[in-house]
Length: 124
Length: 145
Image 1 (cartoon, one colour):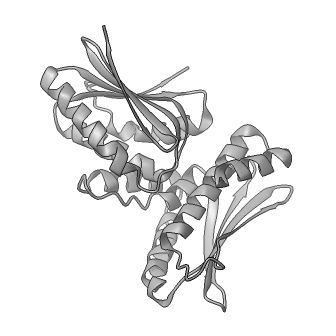
Image 2 (cartoon, chains in turn brown, blue):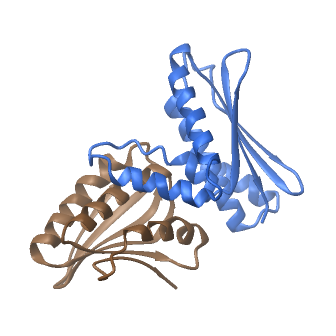
């Protein structure tokens, strides 16, 4: 049975769910915090360390995120880069048919690796 | 609050959802910068947000007081706007900024991505000027697709 945990700060909620093969962090609500890294970074780094030691994939699911400010991208960018330079497997999921998500997240394709260890995936 | 007020205004003005979202993002990023870098000595000093709609363009302007010690931030703002303009495609500026952030230490939370985001995602041209009373006005002019 998957283990689930929820973290809420202002209008942003991060829900972490772990199963046999992956750890998923689902972003929902709006991220309008002045310093979202303070809230997000410890959660993301702990998750990244956890999947690396257990050989699971970290899934960052942004599909239910309604809005984010540019400061929110900073911790996401740093986690993707840390994963890219290491051995972790990470997938970032966004909604391809939501215009702002498509524009914001497709730019993160620069972190994709040829072996699909790091994936930035737009889904319908 | 800025988010919902701007969204409501644009919706009432007949702007579609995607365009409305884009313009709301511009307003929110500019207001966030005003909060971060503005200098407010009393509750009477405030941030002014103005949206001007014409048939083809929308101008989002944010005005806030600044202090003499904010001059360094103004120089930084000027440099960032000029740097963003130096790219033929704002996407390139955005990606360059993302790359720069990725190389910074984890504990460094300042992004300076807002200006590049306004240019790329907001498809807007940025400018700023200082009023005689020492207020800073930053404007983003965006053309409808």
